[in-house]
Length: 504
Image (cartoon, rainbow, N blue to C red; front, side, top):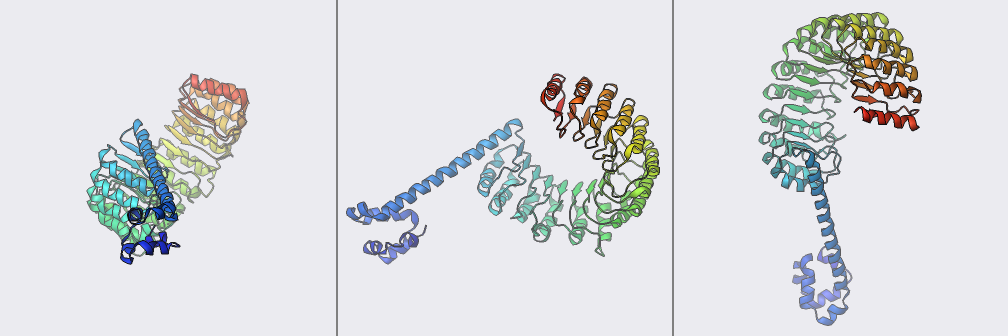
């Protein structure tokens, strides 16, 4: 509070005891001292100024104590979080403020933290500035700053070469603002070549074609092996982008590239088809990119020549012909993990049969094919894949066309398969399908089974309890609201007895 504010309404008292020069030079801390030294005793006893100052002083003391208490609580929270693992400090969504981050920055160099998660908090400029100054003195290798304000992020980028940071997660940093893509992108690009960054997450960060050009120009000079650019504004429409995209991918150490959620259509498949065999990419995410059968056909031609072991093409428009093209390429490819969930075009039975042939001759051991309305005929195709193939993880979620009959078909196949994980939630299998699966488990290798949201009731409890005696380690039954009462308690008790983790 300024002297002018304190003196409002009591000017006569001040002018009686102070010169103008004294009043102008008074600061809030000195006001009470001047009053007590220069005012006669009778005025001190009766003056409303002293009452006001005493109240203000008490209020300031209260604020000071409150701040100290908050600091102590914050430090106590940090101590508890570090008890489990002193190298990991997870402050995700802990409402960390500027003041608290400044306090953390002061003690950070003395801690043995290698992983620091500050995602989804409330700090802004002051806190980020303090963090940037502290990081070069720390042992932090993994830094997560998801969904925070974009304030002062350029300061952090500037000191990156001085830090030990190898993994930087900036997914959705800056929220809906344009700061990340316009103000700070140049600072990041400048810092990357001299930094130790191996993994960089820029998903949902307003990256567009123009910024991708500069990133691809810089990529060969960096150590980056994993790059997430999903959910951005990349369209592959800039005239010069293709050339720089080829340059960056072919001349860098990039092994894991995610471009999912950028509506690039077939153009991204065409460009990758030209260079994939010359790159080091082993993991490729092109889900939700608007790729059609034309694009996947070109991609399939180069797939056998590439090092790609994990391919995600879910939520595109491959259609039956696209699935057949991909199926023909699988046997001669290195692909082990394949995601084709939620294709926007329904696959016909012919394409599923071709897919079966390709999968059985391929190296694929993990397959995601949920949301695709394969029906009971499709269930028979997958049953044969399980019996004759080497799939260890299968995701067939959210396909109500499978139903109880499809579940029974797959249950019989489990007895002769090497499947260990089955994601089978939301398939409308009901009690009939659940009992069939539960009774098949003792003869299978299943260790992980998810059956959530399937209309399962207490009628399946006896069969489920019997299934808990198998090698099963996890059973998911969430959102089956008809499992209740005593039956539910019996199932929980049996799960505890056999050491099975269960979700209800």
